[in-house]
Amino acid sequence: MNINQLIEIVKKKINQNILCDKVEVEDKTFLHRNHRSYQNGKFHIKLKIKSLYLKEKNTIESSKKIYKILDEELKNYIHSIQILID
Image (cartoon, rainbow, N blue to C red):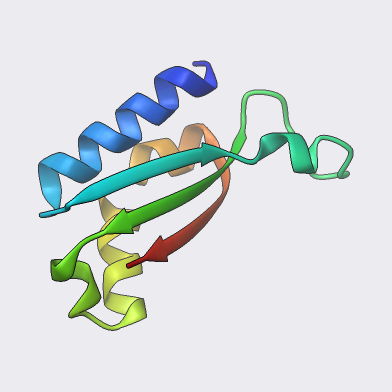
């Protein structure tokens, strides 16, 4: 899987499972290429979600919801994820 495919899958899954006004996914893999733990095919992404639904939850609850939705991607394609909720 390439990063563009992953971004589309992440956006689609978030939009299908959470009421959102906006979902943005940024590839931050380039910042980590020289790290020892870097693995080809595992990506670092930044997820920005504008959602009143998530905003009303505490950080742990909203993160758990996102992790559950992206379970397969986290196991197979995402090495690191940064989540920002607005």
